[in-house]
Image (tube, rainbow, N blue to C red; front, side, top):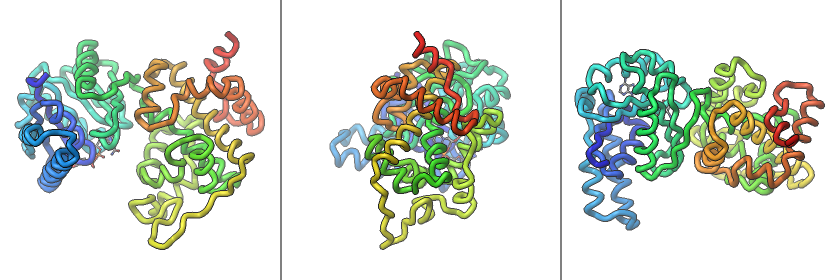
Length: 382
Ligand SMILES: NC(=O)c1ccc[n+]([C@@H]2O[C@H](COP(=O)([O-])OP(=O)(O)OC[C@H]3O[C@@H](n4cnc5c(N)ncnc54)[C@H](O)[C@@H]3O)[C@@H](O)[C@H]2O)c1
């Protein structure tokens, strides 16, 4: 595979990480960004990260020199001309991506595969500007790309099977866990994980529990590494709110994905989370984190409600052929570190219990948001 040359456009958070992953797998990598200062920051970050890997004895000194030598940094798109695969990781704006892909097609060979790391735009729409559109594909890495094993591979309507198969095996050869996702809003993870945030916010808005108690229920009872509010503060409420709104509008306003005013107000107030010093929690020095109310009756209610909504979403993704059951399990355990796959978890708890929770919520609220997925009902009838 070492002869395959990889181009990466955009040297920000994701492009920098993806370039590192490809260079570690012995590829020559051309990293391109219009902004010279972003390029030098990426270069110095690579040097720091790679030397830390040597210190930790994860790689040898000679491997580290090879990896750094593999990457060239440039603001000139023409350096991408010999690439076999170009991965675009620039700003999430369709028009800007279109301009980049039009430009790329003029530079690279006719066999070069063109990939996008988009999290929310459709691959069909990105590829629509290409003359040879069967070479477009989504390769959705997670942040930080060198550490997160999951990559969602997303063929657009135009993508050829050859391009899909090759992208899949190449990403696998990089030590990643590729899963195949249909070109639908949020792909797998950003779709199935929505209730983790949305239902937690809803429970808070109804006054059932405060942020700390909901986080406690999901970590202590559910075994999640972080509770929803801690996680949203970590991701950033600006980023998380934007994804929620994009999934909601892309699903033609399906009430399952309705954003919450609580999150919108936090976003509007600039309460983004850790990075702004305040989100659902206050991160200023000497401010103690609020204590949860460790009431197991409320805690179990919260956990069951959120988990049932997550399982319903996983069933919906399977029902709508977004991905295979196996890939859905891999995506949620490796992309967002859920302690268990949602299908495995539902079997442990009992799918009938999940269905009953959903039916109770649907009956109580009369909202379409809580409608149990037909596949979930069918599986129980079989
Ligand atoms: N940040 C995440 O957690 C994350 C995770 C998965 C996917 N994504 C997706 O990856 C893509 C990049 O996200 P990011 O967070 O790395 O963004 P970023 O803002 O950190 O980096 C984007 C880079 O693209 C460069 N750029 C903008 N227009 C350009 C152009 N025309 N030509 C060349 N370079 C250009 C900018 O200078 C910037 O350095 C987006 O599509 C995003 O949706 C982001």
